[in-house]
Image (cartoon, rainbow, N blue to C red; front, side, top):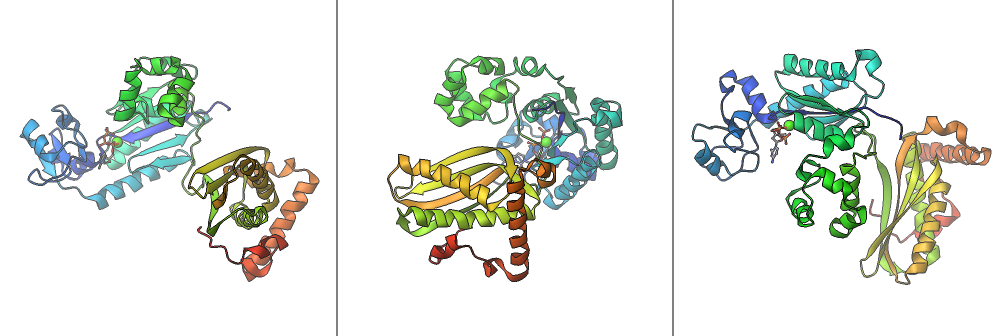
Length: 394
Ligand code: DCP
Ligand code: CA
């Protein structure tokens, strides 16, 4: 993957900081949002002054009152937090069109190549922090790196009001000394398992064979191994950019009929193809899902050399995957589904098509036009005639 520059930005002690902006008397004091301590309930967030007393998200309010009797307890005003969150995201979108909000107070930005506008990415991040401070009165912490996971660890480590940039090539060295729990996705249970095999630092995790982690943690273990090595190909996906499109069908009765399964797959492929073309997208990956009569479920994926969006492409790949799946298992099928992912803009790929593929694209688009005007059922292909009794779930 080409070199990228990713920013992760996260507001400090978000709910409490908003309360302090709205009521400056709360500044510099141990404050928690979550409710009064006479009620059952836990801390949503604590000011950094309260954190010095061991008060953190998730701690019962009664415990908080015991640990720090001077604590000021606030119910919380979610409408206000949402308003601040909207303004925060609006500031970010002035800096990059590629903003992926993660929850209420954090986001990733793809800022690859933006140093030419701001002299450096560091300067750009600093300007973002200044605007957030002057317009909202809030502090943000920022991580800059070549991938999401390293940027996130960097912003977390820089808190509060910090800014850390990890230069390309320095990812592993940066992560290596940190405890494994600093890695996103490593919760309490995972820490126990990792510590159980004698590994305590991210560096230790990066040196543990991937298959060892897979045997203890499943596929999440493989992901963590890549993360520990500073490898993370996840893209910054602005909202509305769907990551995948899929359809699945559960049959009224389990079936062994290949022609019936194929007809179902064709109907699903037509719907997905129309969705893709409607969004001006093409897909590079097709995934088939089969659930057998005993509820075991398999998924099989195939990555294409070139992206495409025709019904035929989705169907052909799906059939290939289905035939292989059924050879391996003679059970009746309860559910079948197909999906596409790794979506790219259709326009970028247009010139790569072979003439026959381009013709198919044009034919598909002509059918889309008729269906847009007269409804999806206005044109039907022979393959779907068998499908009258199927109950479609999505
Ligand atoms: N939140 C919550 N319950 C939790 C965790 C968080 O209600 N268990 C809310 C309150 C936080 C907001 O979500 O203000 C953002 O969560 P963060 O984890 O980013 O925590 P903070 O912003 O409060 O602190 P930090 O400075 O560590 O980011
Ligand atoms: Ca935060």
